[in-house]
Amino acid sequence: MSDQQRPALAVVGWELLRLGAFAFGGLGATLALLQRGLVDRRGWLRQEDISEALAITQALPGSTGIQVVSYLGWRLRGWPGALVAAGAFIAPATALMIAVAAASLALPDEPWVRGALAGIQVGVVGLIIAAMWRLARNQAKNAMLTAVLLTSCVVGFFVHAVLIVVGAGLLGALLSKEKSDG
Amino acid sequence: MDNVIELMARFLVVGAFAFGGGGAALPLVERITVAETGWLTPQQFAVGVGFAYATPGPILILSAFVGFYVAGITGALAATVAVFAIPVVLAAGSAGVVARLNRYARFRAFGRFAAAAAVGLLAVTLAALTRPVVELHPGLLAGALAVFAAERFGLSPVLLLAIAIGAGAAAGAAGF
Image (cartoon, rainbow over all chains, first blue to last red; front, side, top):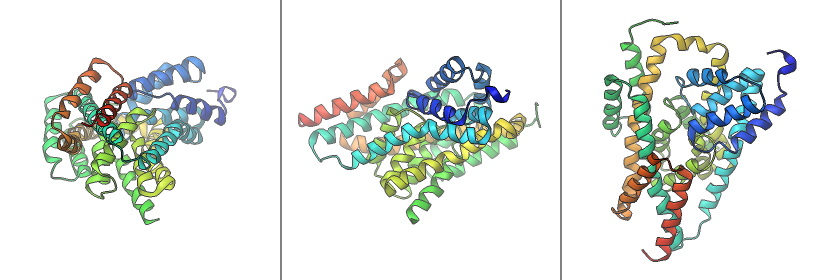
């Protein structure tokens, strides 16, 4: 990309702030939103850039949505672009979460408040079952990965979570035979 | 200040090991904020997760909620920066150099296996969040299953949480 086409840092920040305020509904919806904003509307990137960002960042630890944003920010303006894009993208959600955390500490102890809080707890249990369902179908691609998933369901109650994640990763690296396909 | 440093250290770890994306990292957050430190009660944690689903952006924005409970606005910002720092640097670095690592089968196998294990750990989180619900009333589990079914059917999590909150508030006000 030639220098004239590179958007200014402030414009990148503003666009990602705008997108971050509407990034409801998880990774799929976020990717569609990024495509509409950065590819269709601004014309800064191509659809293939978003697919490439997704393919590469999914193997890395961390929230994939914000990693796609960071990757694309780097493509637009290097390291400053990545940091500004990521910061702007999560700024609306951060402000909202601080507001609701403060509000939740100031709630009166009324029957309807206790009921509403119980409602959230019930809803969250349902949503986590749904998340687990979806993630399990994405991640358990073969018998070995299914076995790892089920083992960690059980072992997770007794062993530290980080040890389980790293242990499983090392097992995968050991079992993997080919050196490289690239 | 000690609190803020511990907060950042723990959320850096969450970010570094969040294989499989933000949703799969909820167990790590639950372990450090409820089980290990007692910073939040299971109920407070569930409320935070609910709002993290309902607000735009990544689910790990939950760290801002936890951070606020531990150390106010400073804590919220510190935890948020910490949880996203390593993933953001890795992702931006990939755009240049680290992408080559991704071509190595061993590196990708590490990610795949770590992600499968992280998803399995959601069972632990689910158990921790289900226990207080059952203590309120076992019948509420039917509501949770209804939310699960409705989400699979395609209803938005934001809408489902709004309904759950409304129903809960109405039931509470009516004296159940």
